[in-house]
Amino acid sequence: MKLLSYETSQNMFEQLEVNSSRSENVPLNISLGRILAEDIVAKYNDPQFPTASMDGYAILHADLDKESIKILGINPAGHDEKRAISLGQCIKTFTGSKMPLGSDTLIPIENVSVEDGKIIIKEKVSFGSSVRPVAEGYKAGDVLIKKGTKIGFAEIGVLAGLNHVMIKVALRPRIAVIATGSEILDLGVASDNPAQIRSSNNYTLGALFESAGAEVIQLGTVGDNKKSIMQIFENALSSADIVVSTGGVSVGDYDFVKDIIPILDAQIIFKGVAIKPGKHILVAQKGNKFILALPGFAYSSTVTAILYVLPLIAKMLGREKAYTIIEAELSEDFKKRSKLTEFTACNVRVEEGAFFVDFESKKIGSSAILTNLLNNSALMITGEEDNNLDKGTQVNVILLENF
Image (tube, rainbow, N blue to C red; front, side, top):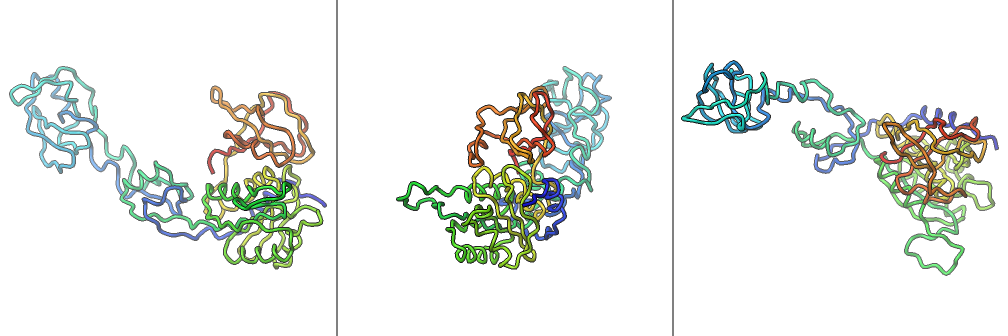
């Protein structure tokens, strides 16, 4: 079987046309983690008028050399102050209050003493001190949050400050997850056969896809039966935008998934990529829906899901990228195991602003070792042209912290 290069498969993936314009409106208080479907643009300056940034007295800076300054009254936060002050006058003004007309400086309470309705300056301040100028935060017309942004705590705060009750967010793509293999036993099912293994792929991938912004439909496990696999795939295609399966794509006698894709009238985009792990991956399309058949080993299915399913989710959500790739320096020698493009679990640390990679506690073995992705691991990329790499070599690394 001739394998596509990793770069070619990624280029083909980038050219896929998907519907990224689907959206819905949700209340702000349930928008956390959703993807914005429009730019958030400021309608007003923030603040709209000079504002006190602490408790003190609004004054004219030119009055600081006077023996005393007369207090006209107080200006509580939220009060629409209309009075104007002239030379020799001040108004007690509180944090967040609109600065009175005529004032240009706020002197903190602790910098003055009060006697007979006047303030006595104990310590001077600079011109404009403790005053938030107009548009200090942002200007009317500024794009504050870009379309495609994942809504976090800061976005929630800014949106609330802008009085956004309902938020336009990208409709989450629905992904049906299927684990195939007669040796796979779903959670909670009693086993009397030590050769069976617990299904973990569907739960791993489900969590991965949800963290990337998708809605997951768990369809459970199905044995190595061609008719049963066909039925579950038909069910998945009727209810999801993307169907992801694990197992059944290799060249074994019971690998039926690869055989039923053409029967489903799905067009195979590519099958087989020169990557390790996951070279038997199959990607197909039926109308505006996609099928990604991944290998059965846990580490292999997870890595291929990161490389191919996450970018598809990102495209459907209108996001620019699915994950972050950084450049890092090898802290130890690395022995490449194949002539394929490899994705190796590694540790990343930051020292003096630079990224470094090591492989402490990472086990070398089959593509089944999912524990290699524990403890905030990352994926180091080595290309087909790479051989063994020396300590100090610069490498590319996929960060797995946030999707």
